[in-house]
Length: 498
Ligand code: BES
Ligand code: ZN
Ligand code: ZN
Image (cartoon, rainbow, N blue to C red; front, side, top):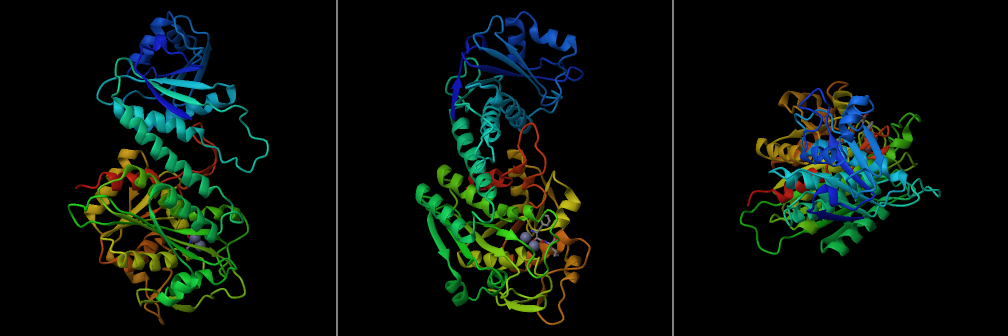
């Protein structure tokens, strides 16, 4: 889909569908945006009439389509509800644009234009609108032989009168960010029979080749030589060999400071639980257990294209957690790459095991700051539901950077505690650490386990188990992978202070 900027008055926009945002009338007034006022004036008060008839109230994601609007060159005028005008920012616009776009997809529309106001938020708004359209365009339908949409929308333009050139940068960035996020979603939507650890490594390798990144994939033999007992222990129950994917981005110029960002992503291509096997109900969902890895690979694709000043290395441990005859057993003790021993009391707590070795390897790559993303615990879903990802960290400075990046990108993330007291749960009678704690505070003890391997580096952990997969279709997104964390990770790298 082409994304374009049209700096013309809305009356002159030639498009199949001109979208304007109108608000809840109880708040600051439905027509808070100049573009909505202009559309209302050009059409001789159509939008006002919509409100008065009670057919439209400006509620979030409400969509009304008017054909052949008087006074406009557009073939349709689409009024989309923005909800409350107060507090409407780029995160809300991203979702609103996506909802409008998704409402238009089945209507045979080929071109869509969204009218924005000028002002100091134009750049942010333009980027968010373009991202909304591109993200709204995504469909996890690669295995449907009968695709829902007959024709695709092939042009999306952002309309803002008299602002020529102002937002080209924002649109270019939006293309890269949304492209990377959709790429991560496409990886995540692959079922486990079509995306094994080996195939994931091939996909990552292709991203590297196409975007000028260095790529290195450690195979099972190399892992044995190095002593990655925790990662190998998880992998040994599957016929599919594991892979540790390493992707390196290096800026052209030596960076001013010595910071080197390491992004680590859990990629369990399928999590049966191993010998501590999961119940069969909803087990199909566990193909999503590589969403952290997909987010990191997607982020690296955007980072390669946006070229931040800081070097970034991605580490994605990829395995399948299966209960094969060679599988590790509860009670097994593995020696991690760091030298610490772990008693595997539950083979379903496998994410932290593979991350332990990846975090240690990240240190050996010279990373100075670590951020990991993982569908790590059911407990984070209990704590935060499907709204916020949980954020844990050992360093306030890095935590603030990550939370700031998440806020700027409209990805909901909530800080979680990591007090030393939780460590009391991590006691093993026979090894340095057990891989599980007690029943309580499971998301925290999982993070605490990771911290043992990230220390002493500043480190942040994103538990995306509740937010990586949308359980039910929303107006702005179909059921399936969300691509959470991609934009936050990219923002973190591109905004890293020089
Ligand atoms: N991949 C799961 C986490 C998960 C569980 C995500 C449910 C979404 C829904 C992870 O590997 C896992 O199984 N964790 C266990 C840990 C437990 C055995 C300590 C869990 O959360 O139940
Ligand atoms: Zn598990
Ligand atoms: Zn898992």
